[in-house]
Length: 112
Image (cartoon, rainbow, N blue to C red; front, side, top):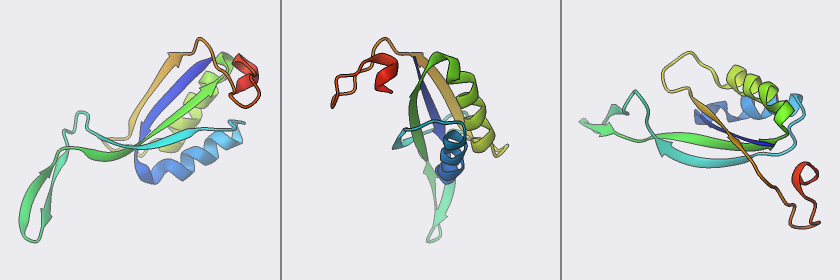
């Protein structure tokens, strides 16, 4: 099993969710986060005053999938989240040692 964590632009969530649903992903977790990468934020003007926005709003999506499904999930996220502009985000993949469904006690692949 693998945990796929993606940091994306907020307005791309529906497209990413739809792409993942089409390939059979049944569940995901979404968290509102703030951060910056190479762009180091940007400046905005509010009521005539310029100020720096150091942390940009992003969404973190977490999905646990069987190891043989990872490539399809990565392609779906990349295809749906890409705008071609700076700040499109990142995807990280982690190994999962164990999963347990609390309600039934099912473990590992059965718990997904």
